[in-house]
Structure formats: C-alpha cells, structure tokens
Image: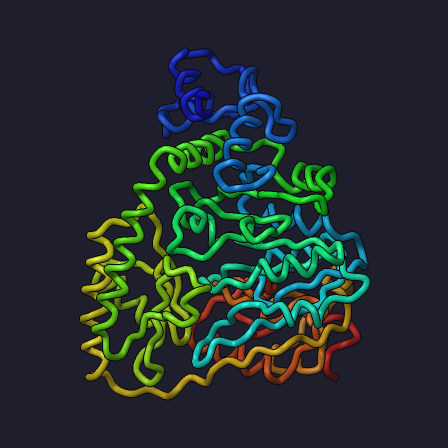
Amino acid sequence: MTTLYKRLQHHAEQCYYPFHMPGHKGGRLGMFTEILQQDITEIEGFDNLHQPNGILLESQKKCADIFGAEESFYLVNGSTSGILSAVFSACSEGEEIVVARNCHKSVYSALVLSGAKPVYILPETIPQSDFLGSVSLKQVQNAITKNTKAVIITSPTYEGITSDIQAISDFVHKKGILLIVDEAHGSHMKFHDFFPKTALEQCADIVIQSLHKTLPCPTQTAVLHIQGNIVNRKRLRQALAMLQTSSPSYIFLSAIDACCDWLQKKGKLAFDDYVKKLEWFYKQSEYWKNIVLFKQYDDCIDKGKLILQLPQMQMTGIELNDILMKRYHLILEMGYLSYSIAMTSPADTQKGFHMLAHAITQIDNDICNMKSKAILPQIKSTLPIIKCLPREAFFAQKKQIAFLESTGSVSGEFVIPYPPGIPIIASGELITEQHIKQINMLKKANISFVGCYDNTLNHIQVLKGSETI
C-alpha cells in the first residue's frame, strides 16, 4: 500500500493547476514551495478525514495495527482535541466522571464543554518532589459511585509516572464504566520493553497519544485509539467531527502516516539504539553528587523522561535550564522549583546525550561552590472545594477583584502553571489561603500562568456575589 506522503509527492510532481483551497496555490508565490506543494484539501483520491473510505481509512487501520488498537483516529488538533472528544462523547451534562487532579488543562475544558460533574482523585505525592505520581486502584474504588459514567487518568504523567491501568480497567469494566487514559506522553512506550506497558495493552477503552511529543512527527499531530464494547463509537465520531477542524492539514496527516510507516519498517532498530543511549546516560548519572536523576518507582516510570532533581538550597530547575541554555546551548523541556525535565526520543543522537551528560557533570561539580539560598517549601497538593460545576462557573456572571483579597471567593477562571498545564484552581472552586501562598511562591520563581484573565495574577475573576466583602 502506498503511503499518503508518497501519494502527495506524486500528486505534486504531476503539476496540476489547483483551482481549490488553500490560497497559497501550492507555493506559487515562492514561499515554502516544497512543503506547500503537498498542502492540499479533500480533492479526488485523497479521502476525507471525517468520513474516510480510502487512503486515510487504510492509513488509520495500519496505525491501529501498529499500536494495538481496534480503531485509531488521526488528530490534527493535537491530543487536546482527542481529550475533548473522549469526554464529550462519554458524559452528558450533569453526569459524573472521576478525574485525576493532575490531568492536563484540556480535561477541564472538556468539563466546561460537556457539563460533566467531576469527582476528583488526588494522585500520590512523590516524596521530596514538586510533582504528583500515580493513581491507585483504591483511590478509583473510593471515588466511583453508582452514577459514574467514566474515569480519566493521565499515564504517564508529564514526569513519566504511570499508573496500574490494568487493575483499574479490570475494576471499572465490571461496573460498565468507561476508562479514558491521557497517554499523550507515552506514544513511544509500545516499541520497547525498556518502557512501561501502554494503556492499550492494559485494556483502557480510549487512549489519546501525542505522536509529536516522543516520536518523529511534527507538533500538533496525535492519535486517538479505542477498543472494547463500552465506547459509544458513533457519538465519539460525531464529537471528533465537531471538535476537530473541518479543514484538516494534509501535511499533518501525511506526517502521521509517515511516522507509522517508519515505526513499522525501522522502529525496532531505532528503539534498540535509543534504549542503549538511555542506559548509557543513566550510568553517567551515578557519578553525580548533588543532582539526582529520578529513578524511583523503577517498574512504572518512563525512563525516556530525564527528571533532574536539584538540591533545594543551591539551585532551582528554572536556574538550571537557564545555565544549560546560555552556557551549553542546551534547551530542556521544563524547569520547575526543584527539578527539570529533559525529554528524549529515538531521534536523539549520542552526541546530544554526551553534551547533556557533560554539562550536568560540570554543573554538579560547581554546585558545591554556589551560595546557599532560602529553601523553597514543598508544594502540598489538596483536593479542591467545589462550589459549582466548571460549566456553570464559566457562564456565570463574574467580577474582577484583587488576587490577594480573593480568599473565600469562588473562582470564575482557571489558574494553571504552564508547563505542565495542571490547574491549581479550576472554575467553580473555592479560593483558599493555601492557593494564595502557593501561587505567590510560583510567581516569585517566575513560573508562567495560563487560563486566567490577568496572567500577572494581580487580579482574578470570581463569581459575582461570592467575592470577599
């Protein structure tokens, strides 16, 4: 079977004149010509993403075979569109969904769109860390009621921690409850036993993966996989058609197709080589005296995520990232209070791993000579106090007040440190004194926020009538 990419190449070589969208007309103005020659619309022979019966249908079937799904759907609006569609297809207004509190902000947007009622689970806190870990079966069992329609969990998390999806899926399926797993950061895990088992391998019903995060695919490309008989497939297809663009990029579609082709033909050798590089890097980290490469929960962590934990009195993750960029020309994924994340993929070179190991080794030696700083208190996560559903709060009348005076008010917006994109406060939740302290500490550490009307967070929107007098 020809790949979509090759068919687009062949189409460009025929030199047809395009009296169709898009308006760049195949790059005829001389801008990005090579790329734009393959940027077409749904013309004859190239199928329709929202009603595929030709080359896109065949490509998605190939993708499902590669990843071990019954059906796979290409996402050109990123994993966000898949998460929105999954929740929207599973829950109607007022219906109950169990949500891990460390879910991505797109899950909370899905709550607003669907009107679903969240029941939150607070994943375990990783000792001496600023991030949350896995969701346990017991937590799910305690959260589920007779009204629960679905459960949504992030696994692996942004930091690479996975949950026991098999145990959770076995339990919820006995009750006819749908399990959705945001596996945006785990699209690579299927292809080597160095990594944890995937959510599909552990019987999750809907699994969303961002190919662009850890596989050779451009930003915004993702896939939604389904299996089992609990998924309302018709409603899911309707949700995908509603929440994805009606003009999908053929550049993105062909990139997903080409990535699947690469996995099929070259994936094994590439992943064997990738794992050897990772194993080499982990051995180098054993010589560090101050910086620690996170290795806890060895059997349930994605070791492709390099979590660099910093000694609190000497350096923050933000400062480490700044040094790596300015001194060593290395840019990491994220720097937070007590750790940084270096994201890796099969595309990383041995030279790149050597550069990072050399830089961290030098910085690790230099830390001893750095001046001690004040200790940043560890952030203690708690479950929110929900006063109304996120959808109700979104449409309610609001008033803007000073953030420092907002304790006791009900938030009318999201307050989300980004990255990683996990809300501290969601719409409809009570603002507490702990929230004020936590957010002020993050502001002082130069953490960015999204989802709020005033991103400086000097002011915040609260529900009218709830504001502190």
